[in-house]
Image 1 (cartoon, one colour):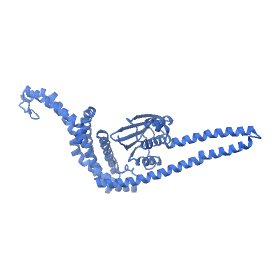
Image 2 (cartoon, helix red, strand yellow):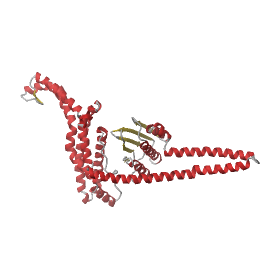
Image 3 (tube, helix red, strand yellow):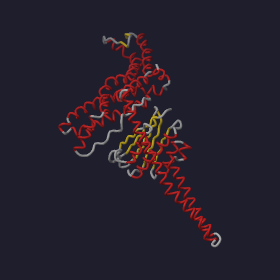
Image 4 (cartoon, helix red, strand yellow):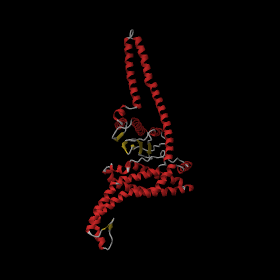
Length: 425
């Protein structure tokens, strides 16, 4: 009943899009079936050696399809389908590395959940997702085509039925029209509800049962708590080091200069005046260092203007051509804004230092209970989540909010980094 009531709050834009989205999900289901066959075939070739080279690409293909299904479920039906763990690592070099990777994959729960999904979704999921499109097509056929084809069929001696109506006269052909309109409206009206059913089926196939999910959740929270504690301790040490080496040292020097000026003010006023001028300059530098330190803890523009304007300010300070598309209907919780801000800051810094990029596109959107950030640069690619400390730091920062980080960076570029963080409305 709650799902039916939820459909009443869906706009006509979502209803009109439901048949096309359902057809896209049917196409995805067909590709899943092919991917499942390819994965099974390449897995059986592993003992022969050739599977060590064919199995990994097929697994990444299947994982990419599953990730696309997760995104569709969250974007179209507001059903969050989260991964059990981090993204699958790249295949290491060397024969032993490939053997180890294949063994880890074949013993990975996430792989088997994705494979189970690829076997069931092409049957059950495709049926549910295809209903809105089928109803609309059948309704359009009855309303626009049926009145013009019944006569040729009847003259040829055929039997022409539209649902319960035997269309063999003009009156019955016209009677089929309102039925067809009702079928079309029904398909459009309940299309979002059927897509939500499909999304929940996707979640059921790609996630674990409640007990196992709670166990995994406890383990994940323990890990993220430890990472958050370590990150906080490291941040406090950084602040202490910056204060000790920067502002504190400069203030001590200012105190010594003022003491010297106090001794010289009677016998050498010019030297005392020079020392006071030097102290004034040092005070300005100390104030600037303190402002930079505060900006590194929590930028004032983030507190005053929110995440979109803070990211635009970052873009202005980046020596690249940065285009920001940020669409947020409301402010986010301050800790979440801060985490995403510094994550984007790190990604822009990586693009400027390592990728040789000339242009970066940043997209920030909120929908379906998820904050999505997409950073794309036109650099040389080659970014690896498992080798770069900066990307791992971003991942740890987001993990405290149950966020995920995905990196797509083939050799030659472009590099696309996607962040997803659950957040309430």
